[in-house]
Amino acid sequence: MATATLTKRPLQRSAGKPQRIAKTNTPASATAAIKQLRLLLKTPRPIFARLMGCSERALANWEAGRPIQDIYKSRLNELRKLYDELAEVTEPEGIGPWFTAPNEEFGGMKPIELIERGEMFRIWRMVFFLKSGTPA
Image 1: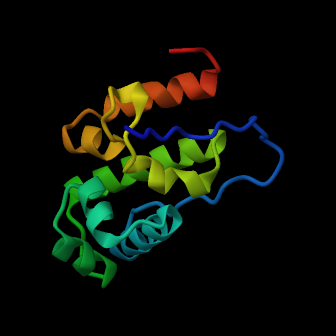
Image 2: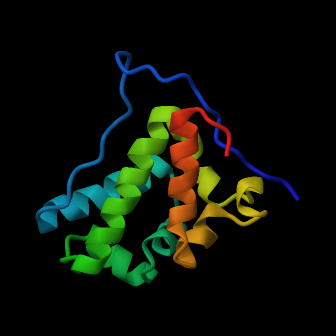
């Protein structure tokens, strides 16, 4: 079974910071944040819908400017924060593919599967250890 890990890079606070994703306070900003995050992750709509826990149709509607429900705004904000944190310690281009690749740290499960199972805390734990530099 092939596994994918994030390529850790040294923390460089002063050098070019990764692109931050818009906050989701208004319907227009939520639409922009969804589009921006999906493009940054280079993730097709079906995969991004799985990350969001919604249908592809709902995602298409939100990308077209329809209002997003609060529960999905919360998920979007958490995914946005996760991307921002991962982009500080790894190459941003590798984050999207990482979500759909089996990972030894998660017992061979894919990060997207953990999200679907409601186990995002396991991903945040990994982020903590990546940022702190201590082994898990």
